[in-house]
Image 1: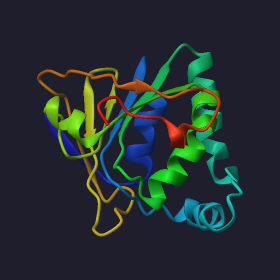
Image 2: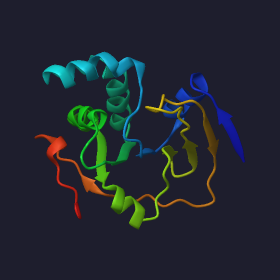
Image 3: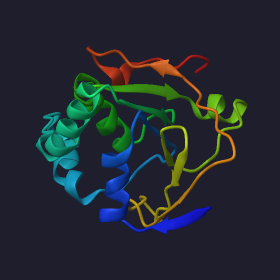
Length: 174
């Protein structure tokens, strides 16, 4: 069974209706998210980090984790990091503080594990939302077919520290 979920209420409902876990696999070296463009430019130009655009997301993660739900993600990080990934890793401690478990893999590790080259969300180990992005710079998300997978394996990775500078995290095997 599958259905196409366009950005908006249908996709957003996946985040409010999951019961146990929301797990994200991120493979892109850059994304174009309108809400974070100004903060990213500021960070890249001055090193100043403004995460006010994330307030709603972080509040939602905090509330879900208070209810015993789990948010986790694995990011495939290029070497060297792209400007976008440097920004994303600078923001990571805020996601972690809100309750997300963030891990990282190198492209070589992802390949060795035969992981896919596309992004997805996995909800409650049952619902798989495959992300489709426009090129270049991957607009967030163009559409997301959601389907109940016949089986799924969630792979770990290197856990990011809750404090310190995660952009300096050394990947195993890198």
